[in-house]
Length: 290
Image (cartoon, rainbow, N blue to C red; front, side, top):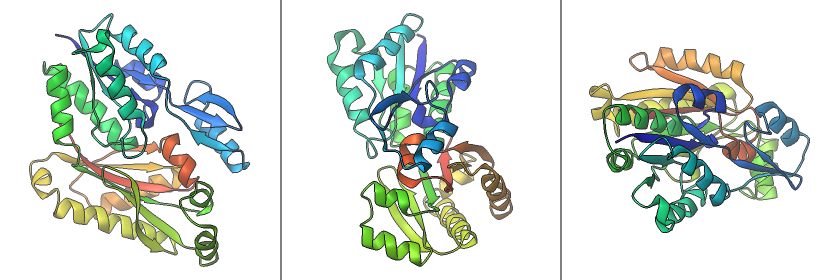
């Protein structure tokens, strides 16, 4: 039984990386001033931020199920089944749409397993790697899906937002709150605990934001995930939005604060999150590994 792993570009895995890893990545659609682009196909990270900062109308969209089905069909020519790992259903309806599609299209029944394991960006990337390792160990699509679902809440993300402009633009803040926050130079720290992007803390300085995130992730590791840490099953990752140099510094600070765990990746955040929080953001995550 040969089982393939397929994901979407919200994982941060590029088309080039996907080829090297032996997986397929569905490019997420991005609408810019009414024109449709596809992440890492017709739209680079650099082009995206250039448009975003120019005050263009930028939004993300669900991929067309027919297009995703075409990718699944292509993969199933070489594999018996596949596990599809999309972004969290708490952040998009994409997962629910494609779950229904896989369940109702006869040719995909018992062959395509859509896994809603509540991941995004660097934690979603790890799910893909876990899926590959499980497949190498001979696990079936159903078994891989079950493992990913059983461990879905064993991850945590904290994100510092550099500007309130894009949260306001996306309707996640009222204009009055955004104005006050901007005047006070507030840098909100947000969190993703499997579902939606929620507020965690408010700070005014980058250094305070980084300290807040490090302390939050340390607490998670010492409490919620202490058993997984003891078993050597947890690791760290960093993400950013057009902020690579600061992300590299942040990695060093995390290494100093949490020396017993590896920082596995330093990746750009996916465009689906980036369009809501804008450039200059930093994030740290911890997640289980197989």
